[in-house]
Structures are given as C-alpha cells and as structure tokens.
Image (cartoon, rainbow, N blue to C red; front, side, top):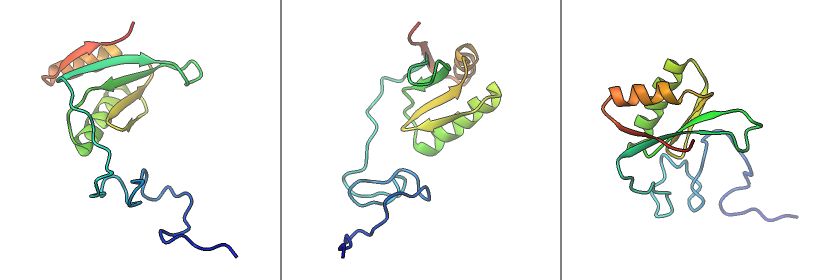
Length: 120
C-alpha cells in the first residue's frame, strides 16, 4: 500500500492556478519565503513580437511592468480589449495575440508610461 504524503495526494489541479512549491498555496495568497518576487525594473516598458515556440504565430509581449498582479491583469485586459484580440498575463508579462506593437505602444504612451520597442 502506498503511503500518503503529509501535504496531500493531489497531483494536478486547475482550481487555484500556480502554487508555491513550499507551502502549496496559491501564489496570490502565499506568505512564505519561497514566494517568487519580481525583479526590480528600470521603469521602461519593452514591447516586442515573439514567434518562438508558437508555431509561427506572432504574439505581442509587454515586459517591465512594476505593478502588482491585479493592476497588471487590468492593464492586460484593457490592451487585449483595445486590440480586439486574445492573450494572457503570466508572471508579470502581458501577451496579446497578434502583431499589435504599434497600437500597444501608442496606448501606453498616452497613459504616461515610458515605452521602447524591443527586438526587430
């Protein structure tokens, strides 16, 4: 008979999203020292187009946001809505499906952010 782990036998669940490897709580509610901290940015947002690992499909990527998770999610929602496209927010990086670099840069500069086009 297989013995049970003191942390439970759950292998995979989509209920809480990403979890802390130490305390197994959702990263949003984790208070232990193993919580992943975002590196300090220089205040410049970088907008680029990535196609690697995406079967040739382009994705506009926004990096360098020095905001909390809720504010990044709200900004990502605003950008996706204005571009009329899908996307996601992962680990402080906003991804918008398609090549919307010009529109994203214009929107962010109108909101007062310092933005640079990264890549080609």
